[in-house]
Length: 136
Image (cartoon, rainbow, N blue to C red; front, side, top):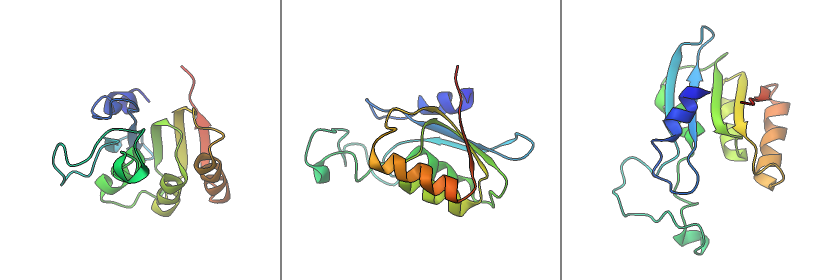
C-alpha cells in the first residue's frame, strides 16, 4: 500500500490523488500508476475543476488509477492483487473483474454510499474478488 500512496503523489489532481499498484502472486510489482488526464493530451486541455457543469469538469476526462495501472501492465493479470488508495468505482471494478485480478486492497472508502461505489462492491463480490480495506 505504501507504493500505491507513493504513486498517488504523481497525480496532478489538486483535490483527489489516487495511486494504484498491481503485484503478482510473489508480490512482485507488475505496474503502478495514478489518476491523471490521458497521457496523449497536453497540459491545459482539460480543467481540474469539479464544480463546473459535468462536460467542463474533470470527471469525464480523468483516467482512474486502477484503469491506468491495468492498461500499463500489458499482461495477463490472473491471480494478481491490486492495491489502491481509494475504493474502486463501478467502471474500475468492471476493469478489475475483466483483467483477472483476484484481490483488491484499498485504503480510503470516502464514497461508500455513492451509487457508483455501491455498484463496484457488488461487481467485485459477484466476480468472487476478495476485497479488503487496509488500515494504517
